[in-house]
Length: 566
Image (cartoon, rainbow, N blue to C red; front, top):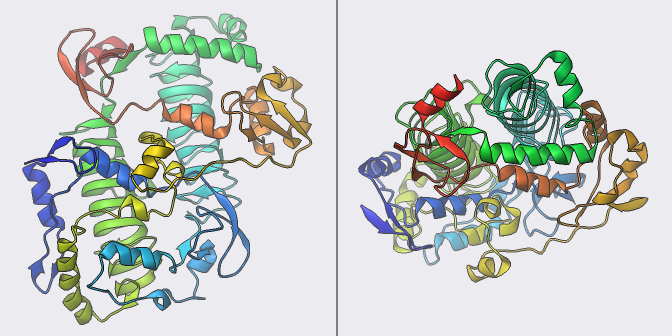
């Protein structure tokens, strides 16, 4: 079946397998299946819509609306709805059903959700079982972590995203375990005392490397296996390595810039890239897939089965995997999900946002430990609720078909929450990272936008980044009282004690870019979530890859890549 996207106009295909899934996920009430209709938006626009509900990195100081204590939250202080700290939200000091209301068949369903949004409490952010990690989100079981998101079982993680079971990590992303003392590393595991790595595994004291495995003391290398003491893929003695490495890594900014320039050239001209990062998978399409089976058009997934149009499945949070789902962003240990953003331990859910431990729920937001609920916000430990109002099982079963019938008439049934209802301005969500729009475009679509304005921190000194001392050894402790002006964005930022200690330990210069700019550049290392046809640059056979045909990197098919690096 071919359809035209209602948002961008692109033609997209709906396969029989997808139609079968819509039938499988459709809820049943009183013995009658309420069929989920095919989507009206293409996969890309559906992803953008879900991501426009996800704020990961914009955090604000405000007071808990229940206990009054100062907290860190995803939501600005001026939001109309209450925001509760984690302990209050999960505590017994309030009843979510007090915000309940009766469904009104004379109004569109999403309009009624908008009304509920203004009164239903939301959790400030999700950071469970952690110590001294107030500025973390979508995270749990951490200690001394700061301004990081999707961090689990880790310690001393700063300015990073998606870190598991690691320690002393700064400015990294997609590290899946057993890493320590890592800086500016992207995608890998088992890294120690290393920096500026991309797609690397089991490295010790390595820097500026691409696609290296089981190596130690390597610098500016690519596609190396089981090597020690190499620079630019040249084998050296231990003494030669020690003498030559200092010109690239000596704790000063000027040598770092030389290494960075050489690293960029290495990426463009010498490194060999595999067409797709797919390992131990069967019947899969997408990129960065590990131990998956029958996942199609999926990216950054591990241990997943029978999925389509999904992004970032993380079974490393638990011992189970994600399976049999479609159109999901950010999930783990879940099954039978459709049009869901941020969920763990879920089953049989449709159009849910930021909810955990929920089963057979439809159109819920910020709910936890709920079952058989519809159109609810901020519920905990509830069952058979509609728009936060409590019903009996019989009442719930009787009313749901009527509501779904009404939603069919208003063309709302089967669609995820519209972007217009997102509690976040578009430019504060991760959608703006992957689908950047300027203010006028966002406003034209009727979505929220907020002008960003940094407040100058209370400091003793403001210094442009280019005027920082060149060497880390020349940086005084007093830098903790300075504001540094980013070289690119001119935005001010501060260094905290943990960072300073880390840079000194690693012999790294103080960064010249604002943390947001560093994050932007790190995320730019990801390839687009799109597959192109291009020829292998070795055997010339046609292959699928996320490297566009016009890109300069050397890209090989799987067979040629393996022959070259092993």
